[in-house]
Amino acid sequence: MFKRGDRVVGKNKFSEPTLFILISLAEENRHGYAIMEDIEKNYDVKLGPGTLYGAISRLEKAGYIEVLESQDRKKPYKLTEEGQIYLTEQIKEIQKVTSLGLKRLGLV
Image (cartoon, rainbow, N blue to C red; front, side, top):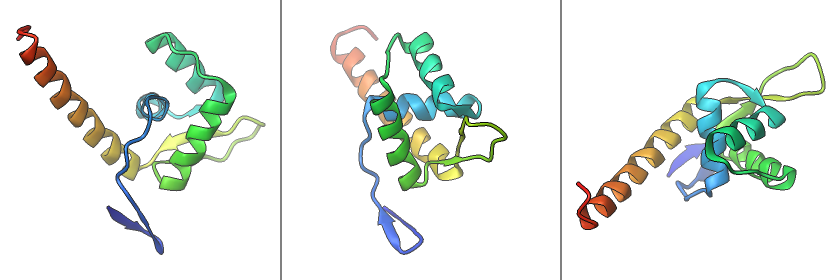
């Protein structure tokens, strides 16, 4: 766990949508609809607005993403340094699980 302001943020596991959002923002800053399109294109997963913006809200509260200023109604989001660290840790954990699974299936 790490301290953020006066509250402690745990390294709890987020759901697939949150990981997809972080991965999308790792490439570039995007607004909500662009994140949704990127996830659908790359993972063939269609997130509804409630799922998307609920996950975005949780990621913002955790300090993993932040809203950037915009000249129009669209709110672009940016991956923070903390978000990058968290995403890296999660991807490494997924790689460990995947490697073990492949090994036990006799595929590596």
